[in-house]
Amino acid sequence: MNIQTNTQTQGQKPKIFVARAIFPEALAKLEQSFEVHSNQEDEIFTPEQLQKALSGVAGALVTGSERIDSAALANAKDLKIVANISVGYNNFDVPAITAAGVMASNTPDVLTDTTADFGFALLMATARRITESEHWVRNGLWDKWSIVNNPLGMDLHHSTIGIIGMGRIGQGIAKRALGFGMNVIYHNRSRLSEADEQSCGASYVSKEELLRTADHVVLVLPYSAESHHTIGAKEIALMKPSATLVNIARGGIVDDLALAQALKEKRIFAAGLDVFEGEPKVNPELLKLSNVVLAPHIASATEKTRRAMVDLAIANLRAALDGKKPPSLINVEVFKP
Ligand code: DGY
Image: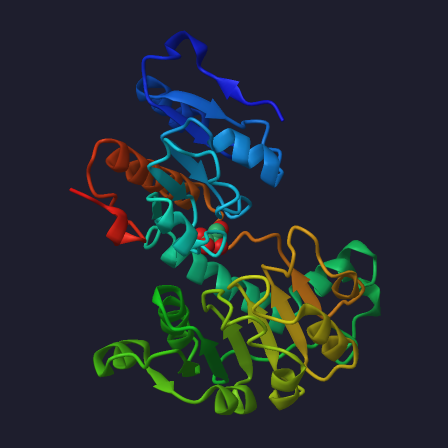
């Protein structure tokens, strides 16, 4: 671990910690206002290193690779805010952060369309076997082309898409699906308003009905103890053998081993995964299969959106250190105007 510090300003400005590499211009701007301790080498910190790095700082910019819990906060007596550069915040133990009197924030909205675009791209790649097809080309198999001997896929147009988790990103995917003439069904903890259902052209169904009837199942729900293994062997058994499953939500929403077994036995057609249990590790059983498209958690990864996420996280951090309410504060009860 090598934490860099802008030493010429040390002592005069509030100290902050930047847990992973960010854009140099954003870092330079931060250095104008703060004594910045940053991990621009981008190594993932151990819990011990993280606990040490949070000691003595007033604010921290963190990502999903940093687990912020009572152990991480044990010596963080000066900390006012942990600003996640991510909309999902399952890396936060919110009750522990709140108990420590620390504000927690995330980056909603700025990534909705980019992430919905990616969910649709992954669905298309999965259903139309795009990565397998690329391997055909790269491995010189094109001369084996025939009407029947090709990676034959599944249609999206006029099929049924089932979206589990109908927040902003789920609704974005539904709207894209309408453009493909798809029938949209969804399941969510709470049903959308009639107006929102209409604008997405989506019908609410039970999880079981969705799994039985959807041609393509897309997961966009937040991770929590309740949503752990929302899709396991039992749920996969309800799906059509021709169905695809796409997970852009979080690792742990799907039982990856059960999925790998189902894909191996062709109990469903294919899967597209951007998130994994225990990522950045990937279950080795998944790596052996050709009917799964794998991506390294890149749903929000366009330059414009990643910059917007960093900017929003910084706006949250600045607000907290200026005594103002951060624009996307999660634990509002901690804020004392
Ligand atoms: C998010 O913001 O939650 C994304 O998964 C991070 O890329």
